[in-house]
Length: 203
Image 1 (cartoon, rainbow, N blue to C red):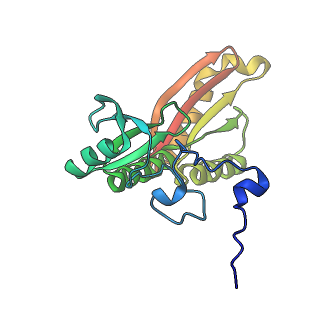
Image 2 (tube, helix red, strand yellow):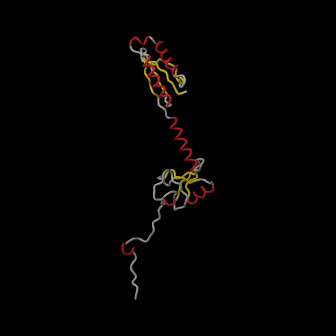
Image 3 (cartoon, helix red, strand yellow):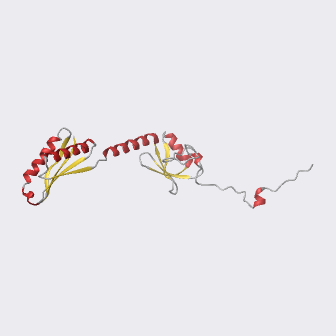
């Protein structure tokens, strides 16, 4: 029985047999699950056809290198070749210890979150009675325990503005009640004709 040789798919469908070479490597060349987009910068650890702009760990520009040469330098220095600007032409990579970099970034983020604090304001009047004053002291204590600063403002109305010493005395007593957990960051200061304030911070 004679075998009939069928024409190839390229002849039937008019497809070119020429193989196109991509400059962008498939995800399988990078660490991690190739089916998912990478979280954070990608680490290049397998060669592909193309070039990269490479920055050394100390910031020195190593220039535009073939991928295989960049990987060789990274392996020689026992560092990772991390892609930091994938959309640049050519893509830009930096040599670094990626594990150490991630740890430092996490630590930096934690420190920034700890540093976030707000300044709360408590307003008083020269005629604020003892009960209201105690309520506002406890409110300020709650703010201080959460790490916030507290601006205590004495508001004068009308003829009360001539009794500056009375207002300053109330502010000092306010602080004295919180002395176990607070410190004065700004002493009572008259800011305008009808306002005087001090700032307390957590001790």
